[in-house]
Length: 167
Image 1: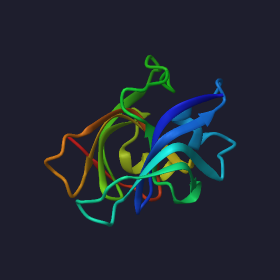
Image 2: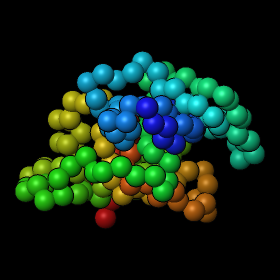
Image 3: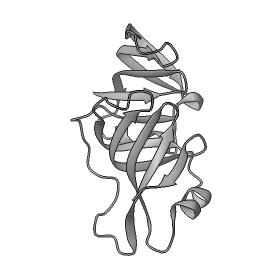
């Protein structure tokens, strides 16, 4: 087993802590695997209530078990990485710049898709509950002057995010 620091987003909370996972598995695609857990369990966790305004203070928990059905986004903490989940030289693929509005956050990112498609058909055709986004800059919507968090890849629940083309 290995411990990897992650961030978990729901509509009401932002939580971070260590996820314990088998050495052979990649954290960055756990929500797209064939055996998605019922809960994402974080250890040495902290949580912020996103509805409490600008003065919210993180609350610490030795363990935090978040039901997977309420998770709207998930990623490794910044500066932690794993190998990419795609072949960069795969033909007929493109990285499309998009904005994903995820709860109270804006994800400026890229979606990897067929060079023959657009973001509308990409999100309509995808059947996975979560889609991967790449090279993200994450902003909190109500804090426009805050520095963005830069993340290599994130999983976003396709049916709860609002997607738009970004130039």
